[in-house]
Image (cartoon, rainbow, N blue to C red):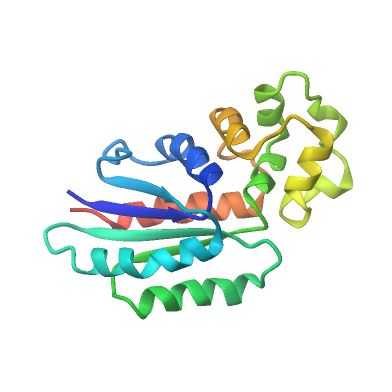
Length: 193
């Protein structure tokens, strides 16, 4: 049986992926059976745990395996950050890997689908914000802070659980979301028994 380990920097991304991935992956992929999502307590904790997972999966002899690493870009240079994470992987083994930098943060994906936010929070009126210039390119705004301003009850983990069921795959205007979804689909399709 194939195995993929997904490492994310925070619990909200884990909760989001728990709901998103079954929507986009082939039915043979089953959460906590042949793919696993591990959340950490921030970037440094995530990066500290990459070497041991890469070593484990590089020595996984009896089945196909791979690792996915997802980290928020925040204020970092995307290319430099991705290279740093790839270097950590390469220094510790040779298992197949996918590194995705979430531009700028998970909440950008929510702003990319305000209708999903409206469905999760019925009192939120997405039509008041959907055409505002600062939200047209969700990956370029300070998404968490902007979301908290327009939706004060929003919380990271609770929001992930509420919004993820309503996220549309094709209609999301976040380029980061689209790149991540497409990358995950391709990667999972390459890791087979």
